[in-house]
Length: 515
Ligand SMILES: [Cu+2]
Image 1 (cartoon, rainbow, N blue to C red):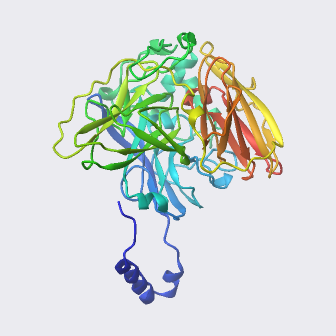
Image 2 (cartoon, rainbow, N blue to C red):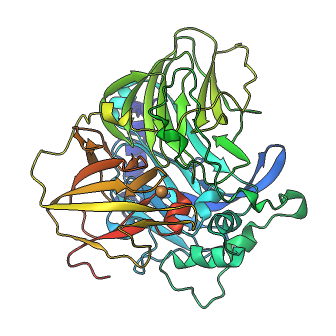
Image 3 (cartoon, rainbow, N blue to C red):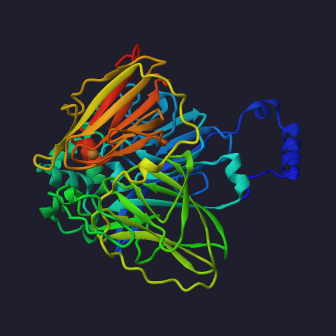
């Protein structure tokens, strides 16, 4: 995994520069290309057409060397309009990949350039256009740093997804109790961008599959499974309130780890006694997991890409859109499943770390049920480099509301896009108190800023710096603090795709930025 440049490479490059024409010499390395396109996965033995984001090395997403700029050319080869958000990165707002009127989606065939200094860590990218994220328009965005490379650990990326053979519009229609056409219109409207002449390709029809690929319609699962979480070994249930909360709105056909199920999991070759940096990304649209390292012990050293003081454990919650960097030192030769268990159910997915010749166990995709996610880990986290302590200039409470019937979710009682922006001034220290009045947990994400978690359920902490935090149901609360240092228009929303689509989003807008 060494990224160092040898002396020979260096002098070779210097020699090449000396003989190149001056114009070529002065040019910086060209942009790296990411192609948004479609691909066919096999899931549960059946083909499924999904989106993909393929980087310059032919793999999903992009990996940048220490100090390298995020200099990317995004090519839209999907055949439909799309726009990709660089989740957790802090670019100028016009490069954030959110479909504001000033930054519309890319037309089919269009390319768009991005160039900013990325922050190091485990990040990801996903479409912010319509429901494309559910169709796997998601990929890792890894920015290495020099200290990590000196550690010389094997990097293992584990990206989680929830998967349905049904079209995303159909899933939304089932939840909201509306027609597929109305759900499609809702997915368009939410983006706040006028349709270009009304003849844009339709994601739904593009995603339609051949007869052999289409699942039998099953509209019976719209109302959520509301699983009462049963304790599993190594977990404790916190209160019987868990019996009443809503979990898992969508009944998925599969849960994927690096695009595969446990029927045919990815086997990652590792060395006996190997040292691993596991980068876990919850890229699911509507599913939250417990990471279960089995017999292994891990040290979480970063959340959402930002370093924390290490926390040692074998089981870790990961809310939608969050990331965990976990260091693992393998104790011996063998096969080590790394599992992700869907909260409130026994369903699971994962990968297997295996030394050469190890017997690979057959792992069922159903096991003892995992409890609902909670903030037990969050309360144990402390940022390595927290923002300077200072009093808040602006304190704002934002209440999270909504429910299953009717299926609609709100912030401060308002539903995107008919929401009131929170106006910020550059230089302010802002504190947001999130209070969850609903029966469901919400993973809340702020674009363009990293915030520190400074209280959970009214108990002050000097917590993690991150970009997505879970607010637990039934009056759970989380207070976050950040500096208003990135002027622009920024989305603030629940990262459950269907909650966002049915209203749980608002704007943080800086003074002086035109709507
Ligand atoms: Cu939500």
